[in-house]
Amino acid sequence: MLFELLYPLRHQAPWLGGLNVLRYVPFRAVMATLTAMLMSFLLSPWFIRELQKKQIGQVVREDEAAHHQVKRGTPTMGGALVILCLLVPTILWADPHNVFVWTTAAVTAGYGVIGYLDDYLKINQRSSAGLAGRYKLVGQFLVGGAALAYVFVPRAGMPADWMDIRFHLAIPFVAFSKHPIVLPGWLYGTFALICVVGMSNGVNLTDGADGLAIGPVIINALTYLVIAYLTGAVVSGIVLAKYLSAIGPETREAISKPEVFFSFAKYLDIPAIASASELTIYCGALIGAGVGFLWFNAFPASVFMGDVGALALGGGIGMLAVLTKSELLSIILGGIFVVEAGSSFLQTSYFKLTRRLTGEGRRLFLRAPFHHHLEKKGWPETKIVVRFWIISILLALVSVAQLKVR
Image (cartoon, rainbow, N blue to C red):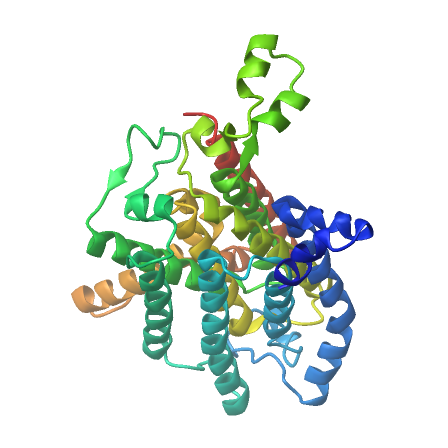
């Protein structure tokens, strides 16, 4: 919005020439990060007090570990403020005409509504059950499916570079131009939708300890910020020649032309999607909102995210993966979320299978998702959280390294 309103004014007066900086994605990404962080720091104390006044507190199951029982009544649904601090800076600093930004923001908001209904039912009924799982999944598939259909269906105004590769999968550590996986539209669409819904539920299942989910979310957002920028950014040959001192005079003369541009994506042999760079602003806002929330969610937490935040942020990360062609990479980068969701799926499936075969259900883990298994093994909550963060950082480093190791 600010880009649309202020950027055209740069020629109106000499002192407005500084508005030219708004054309640069990195500047707007930094401003979105700072805006989101400032909003979170300023609004969170008031928001937490309002949650306490309205007695919107965490519902804890009786079979939870003893150290979780003390969390009963801690304000929850803090994710609603995270969404606000994410979407407002995105709207302010992103290009309002960018289809990728708006579809990602729409999924974030839509999944937030689903999470809100789940949290509302839990609090209203004083039960940890909330919205039935099948209804939650139906809502997630409908919202995610509508958003993906909007960016996949050909129509006027859609970026040509995106439409050419929209059904292609990029393999990590493999050159995209040489070995893309090209799928039929229906198959790719199904896979992309599972990616979005799966990541949303993965983040939600990870949100079971103070700071456990938001830490990897921030790390994922920072990594996607790098990927999104490299996927879409181009540099003028004139600028490149100005700052590269190692090139010879002939090369400098050849690239110092207005029509010459350098594409990071072409150089790294990753998917090149010009419009994807605008997602950097969304990622920056997510980092800022996440850091602001972590300030109050760190052990011992003053507020919990709730499903309203976990489902929304997970859905946003899933959309980032799809729109930057990082669907397969998200399995590595979001490894924490994959393990948490996978452990719950395996636990449930194995229990049902053994009950059908033997009449008695058996479990693979002491409890699922996996961080609860570690709690049952005697791991302190803070140790689990910090080690999950460390693993997430390592996975992020691998994800960034594969951009060049091809």
